[in-house]
Image 1: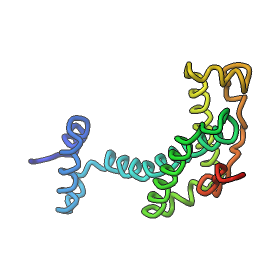
Image 2: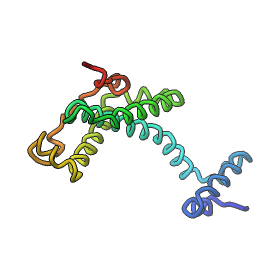
Image 3: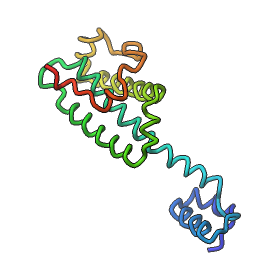
Length: 170
C-alpha cells in the first residue's frame, strides 16, 4: 500500500489499527519522511500518560474508601467492600510501579496526591447523592455535601495510600 503522509493522517482518523501497522512498516524500512510524525508523537505521549492516569485513578479509589472507612461507617459491618477495593487498587498500583518505576516517583509528588484527592472528593459527593445515601448525608453533614465539606488538602500521604489499614486498629 503506497502511503503519503497526508493519506496516513487520514487513515489515523478512519482505521487506527491500520495506521499503526503502516507507520510501523515505514519505521522498520527507515522511510522516516513518510511517517505521520504528528500523530505518532501524540500517541507516544498518550502512552506515557496512560499509566500515570491509571495510577491516579487507583489512588483516588483508595483515598475515597479510606475516607469512607474513617468517617462514614455507621455500623460495624459496613465497609467490607471498601477494604477489598483498597486492596485491589493497591495491587494494581504495585503492578504499575514494577513496570513503570518513574510513575511511582511522580505519584508521590504533592500535586499528584492532591489531584487524586480532588477526584476522590468528587466520588464521595456522588456517593452521598445516591438516593440510598441521602440519610447518611443528612446524618453527617445535615445536607448533601459539596467540595467545601471535605478537607481541601489531601489528608493522606503516599505511604498511607499504599499501606494504611485503619480496619486493623482496635
